[in-house]
Image (cartoon, rainbow, N blue to C red; front, side):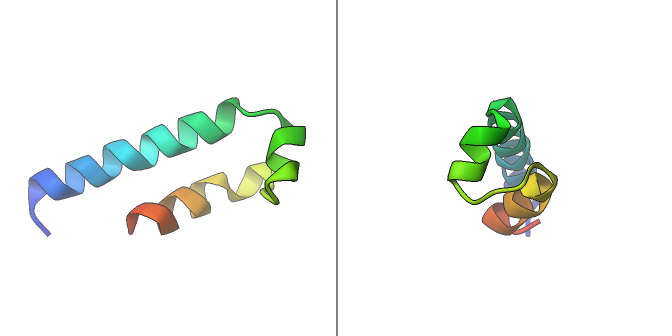
Length: 48
């Protein structure tokens, strides 16, 4: 994987973590997400 693609994936990962982190616990629960699962979900979404 080239450097530009890796960096772009990292940016998307950070954005996903940030957006999910701003959600309330109730909103996350409605989506079936536990707050502790956010990094793993973001990694899975962007292949980290």
